[in-house]
Length: 261
Image (cartoon, rainbow, N blue to C red; front, side, top):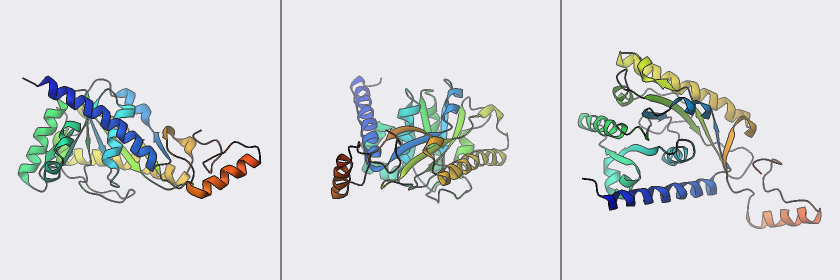
C-alpha cells in the first residue's frame, strides 16, 4: 500500500522544484522561446516519450520546464546515472530513476523502469538517446535503448525535441526549443534498426529547423514562454536609466525595442 504522507511530500517537492526551475532559468537566460508546440495537441491522453538532443548541462532543467509549462498536468520522469542518484536520493521524488550505465543489466534495468513509468499515461518520459553530450548541430547515432522501448506494440507516441542555447543580442543566452512531428508508435517499423533510423530522422529534422531559426535570430519566429532579466546590470544600467530619464523616455533594458515587454 502506498504511503499517503510520502505521496504528499513528493507532490509538494515537485511543485517547489518546478517553481525553482522557473526562477533559475529566468535568472540565467534572456528568454525561453519555443516553436512547433502546436504538435502537442496531437498527443491526447496517450503515453508519451520525448526524446531530445543533448547539447549541455541545462537539458534536465529544460525537460522539467517544458513539462511544467506545456505538458501539465503530466509529471516529469527521466533516467539518471544510478551512482549519481545515490548521492542525491531526493531526485527520485522529483521524477528521476536510476540506470546503471554501460552494461547489459543496466540496459534491462532501464527498460524495466521506463515501462513502469509509462504505465501512467499522465507521465512524460524524457530521454537523450545519444547517451552523452554533443554539439547542438551534430547528428549522432542513437544508442539502442529508445528503439527497444518504443515499437508497434507500445500504445503511445514519441516526440522529438531539439534544444539550443545561443547568444543573440543580450548579455544572457536564449533558451530555444523546437518540437518535431508527433510519431504514433503504431507507424514505426518492425525492424529495430529501421525503427532507430526513423527516430533519428525525426530528431535530425527538428534540429535542422531549430538551427536555421537560431541563425535567423528573430524572436518573432518563436513563442516566448518566459522573459528573463533584461539589461547588463550594475553601473552600466544605472547610467542608462539616468540617460533615459533625462530624455523623458521609459527605460528599455533590452537592446531590441519592444522585445518581450
